[in-house]
Image (cartoon, rainbow, N blue to C red; front, side, top):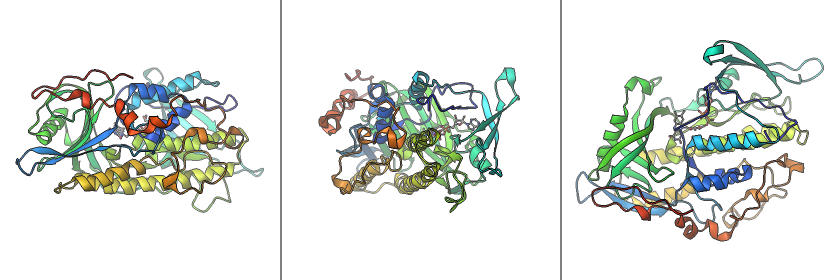
Amino acid sequence: MAAFPDVTTRIVEQKPGRLVLGQADGVACRTMEMFEAFGFSERVLKEAYWVNETSFWRPDDARRGSITRSGRIQDTEDGLSEFPHVILNQARVHDFYLDVMRGGPAPLEPDYSRRLLDLAIAPPGADGPVSHPVTVTLERTDLALQGQLETVRARYVVGCDGARSTVRGALGRALHGDSANQAWGVMDVLAVTDFPDIRLKATIHSAHDGAVLIIPREGGYLVRIYVELDKLADNERISSRNVTAERLIATARRVLHPYTLEVKEVAWWSVYEIGQRLCDKFDDTPEGAAGARDPCVFIAGDACHTHSPKAGQGMNVSIQDSFNLGWKLAGVLRGRCRPCILHTYSAERRAVAQELIDFDRKWAKMFSAPPKAPATPTARASIRRSSRATSSSRGVSPPARRPDTTPRSSRPSRSISTWPRASRSGCASIPRRSSAWRTPGRSSSATRSRRTDAGACSPSPTRWTPPPRAAA
Ligand SMILES: Cc1cc2nc3c(=O)[nH]c(=O)nc-3n(C[C@H](O)[C@H](O)[C@H](O)COP(=O)(O)OP(=O)(O)OC[C@H]3O[C@@H](n4cnc5c(N)ncnc54)[C@H](O)[C@@H]3O)c2cc1C
């Protein structure tokens, strides 16, 4: 919205400032394509860890209590995208967006320390719809002005306010699905280990101590370890379990046995609970009311759908939701699209969220199931499906000029450069790059593997030392 001086936008956030650490980190190829549209994909490519391969470990039948590698596969299918699947901290991704917002023709900065308390939608008046039908009440959360109320009147409001969304509550909507939450522990650590795949994305199942997921962090030193904890009882919160970072480290150590894990520093850790849940509609209009009135309040991201972090899609699907809604809102506000286009947001993105939750259920079941011998074929088939399913950009981009009737399997991956011009979509001001990256060789596994640092860090038998940084 910072691209449009004729649109007034306000972003409010209850936290006192920008995100600094933690949360999600997986950036799918399709999200990279969106970053390309915003002009910061090259910064992400330079800073991120490239997930070129995934390895699988299972209990060793020959040595009780030990694990053995059962497979190592290419992470992303050839031809899926011109971009790789990468890992970069969500805080950095936020920073890049903030830079774009600050540098736009209509510079935009979030208003921090403001909590949304309530939202009301005015019914149409005798003369038709009200021009600014949504009234939002905000409460200041900064010490100096704590408790002070502010009111904002808007034509449109988008609630990107997370899994416990107040906006969703104000619309009378709820997330439906699992009754109980799955608890997760996650930590970014500086580790010394002789586990050979510490610089690869790796899923590790032990015989009796559960499973962990390893995601190397950008920069070459830290590693993220996800530890699946217990399923919580209905209405139980993970905070009541008093899980500590030491417990997460102890679990990871048991799973990695006979390899050693010595944690030198915990840069960030968190426990959180999550269920596979979906909202029945992503806007304020009742089902079947498309002809009667157009939506003016929307929800996006975790406010609409929640799922496990195993498929690494929380941030991606949320960014893609907002991208879909963003260009439509800009089109309507600038008089280039009719408001009825806004109905398509919920229909398109809910279908994608449903697909993701179905996939996540299967993937989560497979991840948590006791490992079978040999694990490789199932794992391989599933990870291939995963790279396709979780890279879906359906319902994200503006409509194509002509429907593409080419069979999906023989189409090249969709690229931002194929999108229509602004006259139809309202996307004119999104910076487009004439991309030197866009060469056929770039999407090949050979090119991608140039950037992996997996091979460069085979550990000594007893100690793992940080690998040299891969050349850009
Ligand atoms: C602590 C934590 C750890 C996570 N770790 C992982 C992970 O390891 N891997 C992974 O894949 N995903 C993780 N996630 C999920 C992932 O970050 C989300 O899927 C993704 O950020 C979705 O983005 P979102 O904007 O929809 O919601 P969020 O990122 O939750 O952002 C919602 C924002 O709205 C603000 N907000 C909420 N209510 C109000 C209000 N009333 N008024 C004003 N502001 C409000 C919040 O402060 C927050 O900044 C984590 C989420 C959290 C919260």
